[in-house]
Image (cartoon, rainbow, N blue to C red; front, side, top):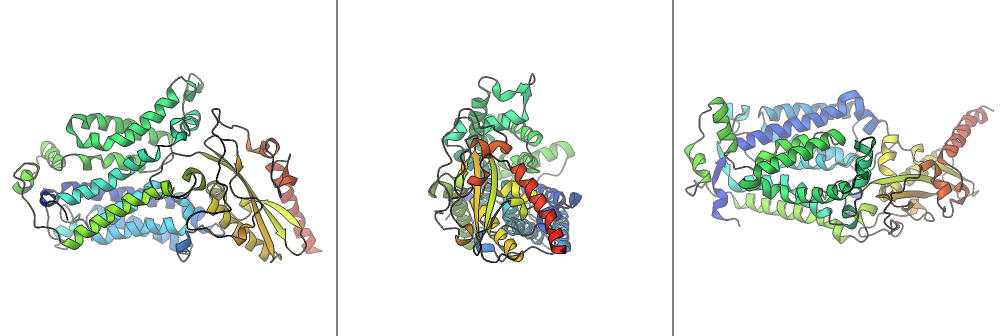
Length: 498
């Protein structure tokens, strides 16, 4: 199933490095939730958490349980750094992130997904065979080499975000300058004005971003361009770290670039700086034509590796197969390495109708969502539907068990004029997410605009023609509605007292 050279021995020091980098990255990830009790705001305080349809059964721990979840993750990360029960610790880290991604759907970030997958791979690689307590205490057999095909599996995993990041940019919006122009406008200034206003800057950003993602892995693998790729990566990732709130991702990608270098690179550098003993002769010869070949890996191991590769090659293609624009309807967007492709501004409100009296009330999503949730859910069709169901349940608790809930989800994609994302005439409590497409989701995000829509949200209901049954909001503003709901809320206790 694999060529004979795939079993050539390569220096396992690279596995030690990846083990430590992954552990430190996930330690920082877990610590970010415990710092300032952020886990409470995200997982404990919300009325409900968003779910993927097949994983409704994944429930959150209690408040103390969520704290322990991240505390145990940090402990497992420390264990992996020192190579203590390496496989158990790697599996714990993989599960920890996977659980978080499933228990609260809207928290998905590509680098969480990458960290979980990479930790999962370490379960099956001999990461505890060297410079570890496992090797010291005999828990794992000492290993100074491992098969070349396993190195390429690791390269495949770490190179995948770059490759599919480039493929995903092959759309009209990216090369017409969006969302790049919006990103540059809000984050960089030159001479007191946005850098996006300088000639050629936006197009340069778009084409260079595409070229970097597409070429950086081949450039790292090819010796003549390797150090140019390193320099470009430093500029790219350090700029992202300084301007985007993406956590450990830039540092993780910089630290793992060495995976694409010749496998003896770390060993040679180590001997140069600290005078370490050379690795086994078989490993030294692994980069030559006389490379030592290890015993063939079990067929089940290589079969699993091929299955893993095929699944992760196909999974990101969903966005191209599903009907409609994935940047708009979100189908196939997650778990597909689609990064920095869309900028969405959303203004979403709901209409609750009492089926018995036809009395109605307009409410914002924050009546059942936290501000953190609303910021991420108001522009996602399935999360809008789940919010509508939660609002219906809240209305039932307040004495209106038979109700209908409609949504006015005005969404601007990459600077377009806002349009309704979901059908405002559909009772969202009576629909479900389809496996192929959703009839209640509007397919067209509207025409692309050379000048991005920049009308303040408080004026959207005045600038746009609102559809039925939200016409009563025409000419008003979200701020007026908030004041009305606050007044209504203050009056209710007085009525209850009477």
